[in-house]
Structures are given as structure tokens and as C-alpha cells.
Length: 296
Image (cartoon, rainbow, N blue to C red; front, top):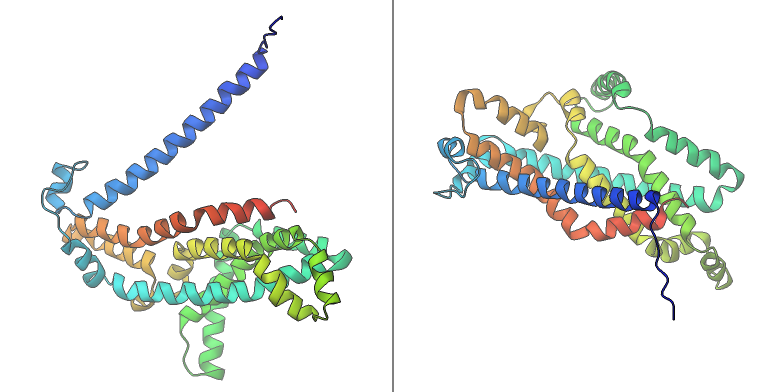
């Protein structure tokens, strides 16, 4: 019985080589990022002198007080509360608006659903730099109007939350449109046959089935808003109202007087570690939600 051998063409061999190169590059990128996180955490437990003398080794003396300094002295504790409140309120508003909007466009829009979805996709393509000056002008106008005509006082963090919602809606609606379109329409027909109203079908059938996509969008918005810095810098002049990233920048500016590098690394750890843990816990759901809803 003759044995047939498969000869690889130069193109197929090149494709295999490119595939291995891409995989090796990705693993190298992952290793560098993991090493960077470990390096930051280790240096957050050292004194400033030890950081310069032994930047890559284990701490000789584990200085947990660096986290106390970063949390209390630099104002990261108060900034953490501001960040959590802003992110929670903003993400709740984003999801409360984007879920019904995406469902309406995906299921009830008819011929207009395509152009409307395209408009949301176009909203994602607008660079943030083009919106910076209009946001500042609108923020000043909103504050002045509320102070002079409505409430007599105004918290600029409310303005920040409003801009968070507006800027995050295009991405959220666009992703959820694809996810709702991936769900079979027979489910809605079965609900209608059982006497369920469109609203009941939406809340009790479609939303639970779309939970992976909803979780994906919610987590990605949390990651994005947690790391946001520029909008707060532009709209919130009061340091006591600023978020973690801005407080960390202020802490870095004070380093020229204190040289507390251990405390600075501790502050960086406080800012980045919660989001790393969140992604590690929900990373598989994020990937699943994106792959199921994409391209629909």
C-alpha cells in the first residue's frame, strides 16, 4: 500500500512561519505585561532607596505602610470613592439606555435599523481630541445655567457623568445591536403566542438571553471609565472631587518634594490592580460576548 506524502508549498510554509511568529510575539507581549505588573507590586513594598539599589529583586523589608501613605496622604482614598460612584452611576445609565435602544434598533427598526446602526458606528469613529474644546464649553455652560437658573449650586462630577454616558453610548449600542440580532426571532414569536406583551418579552426573555453580551459591554465600560483621566482634568478643578487617575497624577507632581517612590508605586498598584482582577475574573465572558455578537 503506497504512502502518500504531503509536500508543503513555499506559501504554506511561510504561513506556518508567520503563525508561529505571531503567537510568539503575543506570548512575549503577555510576558512583558505580567512582568511589569509584578515589578510594580514588588516596588510598591520597598523604600525609595531600595527601589534604586535593587529595582528588580524582592523587598528586603516589606513596607506595607506605603499603601497607607498612598491611600491617606495623597488623597487616593477620597479619589477612590469618587471614582467608584462615578463609574457605577455612569455604567448604570449607559446600560439602562443602550439595552432598550439596541433591542429596538435590532428588532423593531425595520428598514431604518441599518442606517441608525451605522450612525452609532460613525459615533465611535469621532476622535476624542475633536470633542475636548466643545466639552469644556458645554461643561461651563451647564454649570453656569444650573447655578444661575435652577439649583444655585452644581457638582461638576454630574457633568462628567453625563459626558461619560454620551461618549460611551455609541460603542455600547453598536455591540448590543449585533448581539440582539444573533438571537433567534422564534423566541419572540413563541412569547407572543403565549400572550406575552412586547415589553414582557423584552425583559423576561430577550434580556436574560443577552446577558453575556450585556456583561461584556458593562465590564468594558467599567474598564474604560475607571481608566479615564482627561475629562476629569478638563471639567473638575477641585482636587477633592477628582478621580483616582487624576489624584495619582497630583501625587506624582508632589514627588519632586517628597521623593516617596514606594508610595507612588503603591498608588499605581491601587489604581490598576482592581481592573486587572476584574478582567481575570470576567475575561472569558468578555471574549464570549464579543465573539457571539460580532458581525451580526
